[in-house]
Picture 1 (cartoon, rainbow, N blue to C red):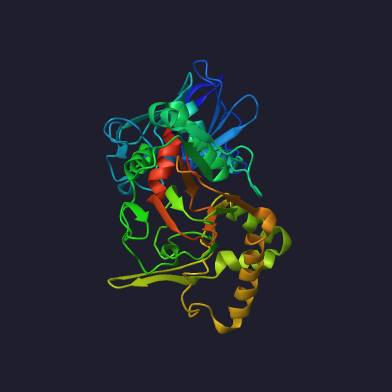
Picture 2: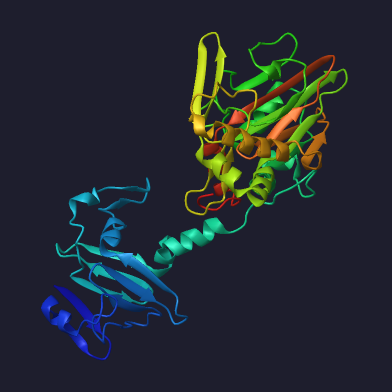
Length: 411
């Protein structure tokens, strides 16, 4: 049984059999199913397995009864200190219906068959609907760029370390452009570490936490530890989850060359999508292997080169690294050349000179790069070059960006 509170009709309890006599469809059970109570700006319909809330501007929200029971935020169902559920809702029948359901002001009040009472603010419900979520994460937050983007943040280190505004400026630059720079930093490894930790703890990898690349330093079997040029690429394509941010600090360089190269990987991917949708589809569907090998280490991951947001379809990650590609054993024979041709299209877009940003980093500058979006490289160099840097995990980076107000809930 379901109690329906009917506008201008008083309060009645109808049997499902009686309701079915008047039912025109699942979306229209009885003529009097709409009501407004206690000054609410919402109208309410109670249907077989869900309710519909609509406002005067004709926007509406639908919620299954099971969803509402699952999202009860009373103290016995939800711990507001830990933001975790206290109960396993899957012990509740999927066919659950409210015993009573009413609007009071801007609050939805539900009493369930076992007597349990739930309350939901209309504002909170409006933020949890799928349409609301989809609109939030679909909103444009990124700016695609070619060459040097005009609006990259250059944040003074004092402001960055000591103020929320300074941190926000860097985070906003990273979420919009994938690049941000902190300036006025001492040319020491300790200063590098301090700047990194303002965002989040450095991610520990086989290269350490805050790593150094210098002539007499620790050596790894990686091209980055040579003096040769490095084409644009993403790091960690051989990790299950590549680092979210990469940080570079050129402490000193007595020689020539060594310019930093940056390319907007999402801009390159968009170019492929615009010009050859079949190649784009191949790059988001076909899995290849990337690996890293040295004594005591063998990292290997199978993944597509491009990843999209599962709901909005926006770019989420590019895993572009021609150095770390493993043998092509994961692609069926019939699709091998199709993948090569698609990757060739992406490579052409990545290496387009008009999309390259070359910069000579100063010893007082710390460069932050979104490793899920922006490709980096360098020109060959001579002489002694000392670089400090580190990684920040994707989850730590996005957490900090959300807290700073620079990133939507899920982007």
